[in-house]
Every structure is written in C-alpha cells, then in structure tokens.
Length: 131
Length: 369
Image 1 (cartoon, rainbow over the protein chains, first blue to last red):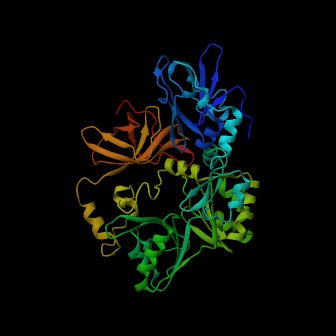
Image 2: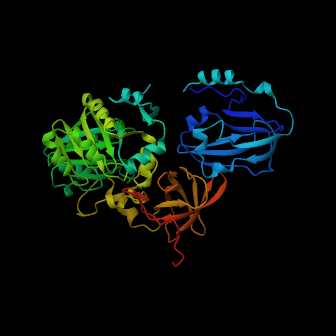
Image 3: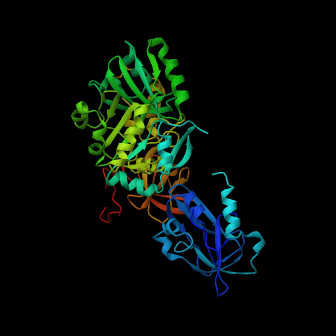
C-alpha cells in the first residue's frame, strides 16, 4: 500500500480533499476507492460555476463494473473541473491523488474538519473495512 | 467463504481480486480488467472456469433423452467430440439454463452447465432422466480452463500430451477430443479462437503455471463478461431466465423445429409464442452519447414502446458503451435509454459487436441510407 499524501483530508465516502492556497479545495476519490471500482471508463463532471450543496451529487465515476456517485463533501461553487478525465478517466486509476483530481470547489462556508480524517485516520478506517 | 476451485491458490499468487460468483470464490481481475480484455483480443488469456458444472450422461437411450431434454437437436451431432449449444427449457418455454453438449458416442454425452444453476440443473436433469434409464454423473473432480485469443492454441499446445497435440491443433471450431485424461475443445465465451480444457484437478495448477510462463495473461470474470458482451454471447440470469424464452433472447438459432415430430420440453409453449405477433426482439445497442449503459436500464422507442437492457457495459475494444437489450417488435434503428435519469441516444446494431479481434459494427451511421 502506498503512503497517503500528508496534505490531504479524507471522507468516509472515500473522497480526498486538498486545501489550495487560493482558498479553493481540490477533490477526488481515493486510491482505495479506485481499486474497489476497477478500471474507470467514464467520468461525468459538473459545470464550472455550478453551485452544489453539501452531500449533493457532484460527479459520477463509472468503472467497468459499476457507476458510483461522488458527493460534495461541503457546499460550494465549482471553480474548475478536470476536463482531461473526459478522455482519460483511467488517470484516476493511475494517479488518484494527482492527475486523477476531479473538481476544484470554493467552499460556501468553512470546512468542518471534525467530519474529515487525517491520512493516518483514513488508513486505519480502510484497514478496518471488510474487504 | 465460498467454494474454491483447484486454482484458487494460483489466483491468489497472481494478485487476484476475489469475488463471490454463484457461491464460488472467483477472480474478478488480477489488476486491470481492461488489460486482460485486450490480452485476449490481441494475444492470449486464460480463465479458470472450474466452477462450471460438468455432467456426463450415459445410457442406451441417452440420445433420445437429450432430444427430449433440450431445444436444440443432438441428432445434429454425429461425429465424436462435436459440440452443440442449446437451451434447456421448462414447459412454459422459459430457459432453465444454457449449456454445451459434447457428443462422445450415441450413448455418451458430456454437458457443461452454469455454476450458479448447478443444483436446479442437476435436479431437473435427474428428474427427467428417470424414465430413460440414463446415468447422470457430475464430474466435480475435474477442473477446467479456457485459453482464449489469437495465439491461445499455439501457446497452450505444449500442455497437451505429445501424442494428442497434432490432433488437438487440427480440431475445427466447436469440436473436441479426449487427450489422455484431458478433454480439449475448440470452444469459448470470448469471440476469439481458443480451447477449453477439462482435466483432473491436480493437473490444473501445473497447466496454469505453464500457460503463464508462456506469456498467457491470467484473466478474471470481469474480462470474461466484457469479452462475451462484445461477442454478443448471452449470459444466463441476465439475458434470459426461466421467464424468458430463447425466442426473446436472440437464441432462435438454437431451437431445432425440425423434425416436426420431435417433442422437446417447452416445444408447445414455444411454438405458440413463435406464431404470435409482437414477439420481443433481442438486439445490440451502441451508445452514441457519452456514458455507460447498464443492466436493467429502460430502452424507449418513440412511438413503439419500451424495452430493457439485459447486459450493458463498456466495450474496451470499441471504446464506447454497448448493450444487449430485449425491445419491442418493429422496424426501427434508433432508441433512447434512461441512464440515471438522462435520456441518451442509442443505435440498434447487428451483433456481434466484435469477433476475432475485429470490430464488426459500423461505428458511424452511413448518411446515404
């Protein structure tokens, strides 16, 4: 298992978040999530400028196996989407925390860190899942 | 914990992701389903299909029994080792299972039926066999692998006993032969050339290792499913089941109506359906919009009616989503599918989508039509 990048926060839905310097947050799905989904074949992205509520459907990732919703970990406005995924969804498989990023969002309010996990906490979380 | 095939430890060694399939712990993939799919289309891959149920039938009246048991006619089988694909129907004409029957002699046949339907199949066959005094023997001690792809036979040939190798390589499609304690058939479920090999369980890990050493890719159930979908080969339980007849599942070609006086189980119901108007079609769909078609999504044909996707997914060879669907009768070549609340455009296409490494459908509509 690869080490989880130290600057990320994680959700129970197997999403990762990175706070950017400009106040926006980059969001993707974790390496564990892509492994469980299998080869990704299609990613449906939101529109730039779109407002999404916390818990709202933000993107859909579809693998050879199944379709999976990606929910917004916080409410906010979409400031960028990873357009490259339209043609290369497998970037999520090969580089979930880098080239496989999905959206960048400007949070409407603060980020509730108590609901998020540190890399160590997330590692423990997935280690304790029934695989 | 499910049942394990004799190759379970080999799957583990090869890094398989194991899933439950009909009560069996089977490999879904060994890292990348797409790469395994391409390996079979372009070179060679091997699948563990030991979970499938092998049943040997023997008796003086075995031929007569099978002519009654299944919808295709085993009288077509006259040469040793010849194979027949058929459905086994209930009296309503619904499909209990689909199977392959190999002719060994007119008193000996080998049946290969699905894993998930094993119990009901054996019960049904035994129940029907009684009056014919046909012995029904499950061969649970045998393992089975499918070696598939344009280079599969050549790479697998060294696994066959030297004295049988030439004959095995000379097998025509849909023919098999005994090779010592192995049974080798030029059959498969991928749309590629290759063999399916039955053998004693103890030999399977040895054959597996030899194939992998020869460069054959280990392939899981995931790739098996996308390969068979591209080849438009039906999957029992999704494309047809006990409530669906072969006529509504694109399997008309497996029903032998001649001779007219052959009474097979389900014939009466099937004949009534055949003569009724509006029997649903079973077609291939190509998604023109972006997205992925999935099983059970609704197909809407404007002005005609609605149908359902029975097998949908992503085609790694084509790079688009394809599906098999049961749709209303009528002459049309376009429809829409409700994909997670969005109506996406599909084109009705002639199957198979892919065969022997080649895309067989027109990816772009001809404008001069």
